Image (cartoon, rainbow, N blue to C red; front, top):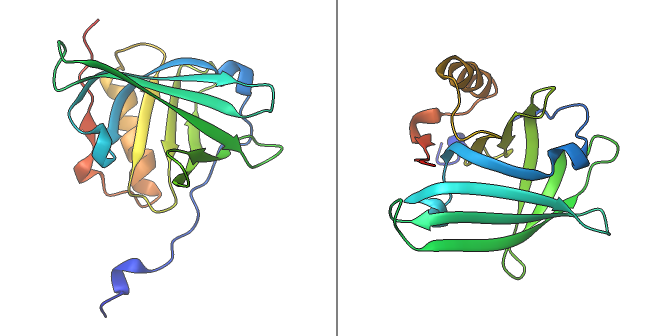
Length: 161
């Protein structure tokens, strides 16, 4: 009974194919179930750049604590694991710390994306614009709930540009 909440879940489904060149560029973080270091961030942007090895260099930029807070930046490496979909990555954080990163949703125009994890502990809703229509947010929330996400911890990331 102690481990009943740890039952194995189905892996997160991913999109059929991610064009890494189209996925590259800036994505505003609209909402997330944040990791501990992402709490209290403002104007968060994830930037992706395909390197010569086929990995995605990921730069996370944000203001800490408020819109006028210190601007911070961290760089990580996304190692693309799933060929031919390009939708399953292993993110290399600091030293040996790695995490799974699955592109669960990307619209055909590459304007909105959702990155999820099999553990359903964190999620990121991102867009090419710093605003997202409420009806699109509702649609994405429903999709995430349908695959087993508890969205009580989903937080809007304040954006003001």
